[in-house]
Image (tube, rainbow, N blue to C red; front, top):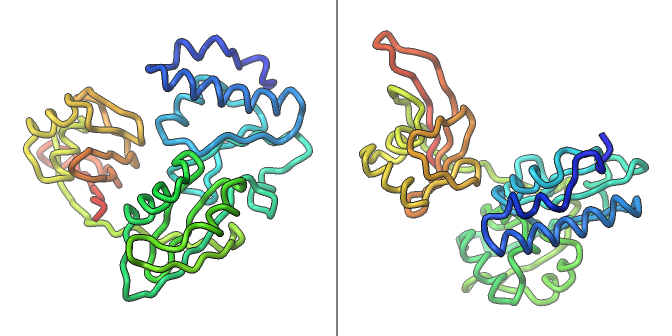
Length: 267
């Protein structure tokens, strides 16, 4: 597929919901389109799942355009254009636009994701230059843009009260901790969003619907205000104020004609 057959800058007006969306999409367009036009590598900042979804409508799926966050299941990813002379595997090599920094700390401390994010932003580092923050016992692997990595190495020394020792490591050596989950087995009449939220967070369906109607719910990073929206298997649902769940498995119908499901609640 040739990018010129799909991409149209005028689509920004149709896709953007806010002035901020419009500015972001225009910035992404200019970066990626310049790389394609000159046939050189180009990359954007890190994008949220919602922002990534908007770029699909803007760019389509042209050859050479990848969403990359440093590892397979990354939540925050940058868009990267690679000309024909570069393989996708080059994204994992030394000159990748995405860098992994490992922060080591005393294992008796337990800084959280929020501690790291707050400390990074407190050090003047913009959120768009940061990808996922993967905290484990005694270490945290940070995915950042190659441009900001030297600044972080020089200026980021603590998260909360925890002292850090930073070093850059190859992307192939990054350690992604398995998320802690509570498994919930349940049955429901339908796979409506409010039903899944009700089951996953153990709240009434009417309260679940209130969260959705208030704009506090998202499916795979995309805001959803429709309580009756069907939820597909594997979808992650986040609800502001409650947390995050995943519709891990749909196991068919019970004898009472209800749908058997397995939900993972992240703890």
